[in-house]
Length: 59
Image 1 (cartoon, rainbow, N blue to C red):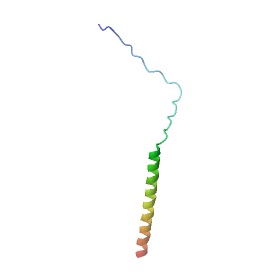
Image 2: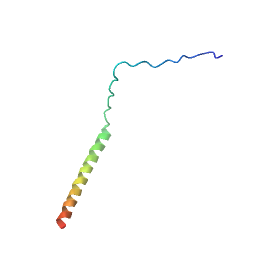
Image 3: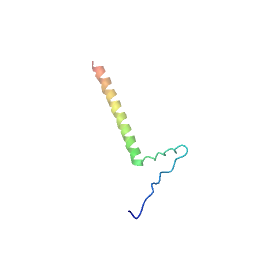
Image 4: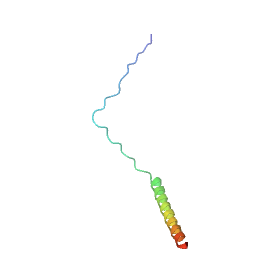
C-alpha cells in the first residue's frame, strides 16, 4: 500500500462572464514594416494603372 494518497481537486467553478482578453500593443518594428508594405503596394498599383493607361493609348 502506498504511503501517500492524493485527492483529485477539481478546478474552481467560474461564475459570471469571462473577462475580455486585452490585445497587446503591436511592436514599433511591426508598425514600421506595415507602413512600408502599404506604401509598396500603393506604388505597385499606381505603376500598374499607368502601364494599363499607356497600353490603351497605344492601341
